[in-house]
Length: 89
Image (tube, rainbow, N blue to C red; front, side, top):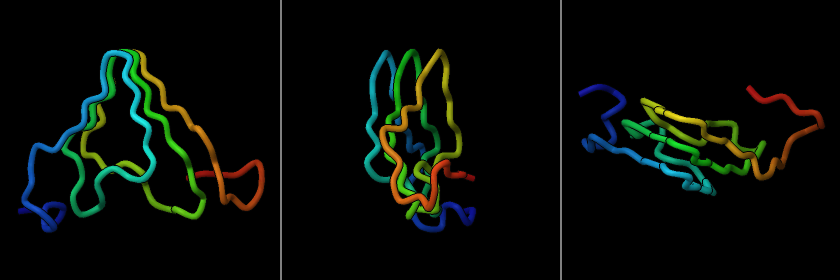
């Protein structure tokens, strides 16, 4: 078992957002010790996020991001950044 799987033995974890659906992300998806195997955003779907400069880590942990079709990543808000314009890595 790899180090990425040391937290849990769960496999085949996935989220599918498809056919003009919207996922509003208010926190994080998965984590560094147990990521999603696949996140699929497909066919006109939207992922909406709120960015917090106080959270320096990723918001989505996935091994495979699959995005067939035309999809949208929407940033609903940005807070806790030192200055505007801000730089994100």
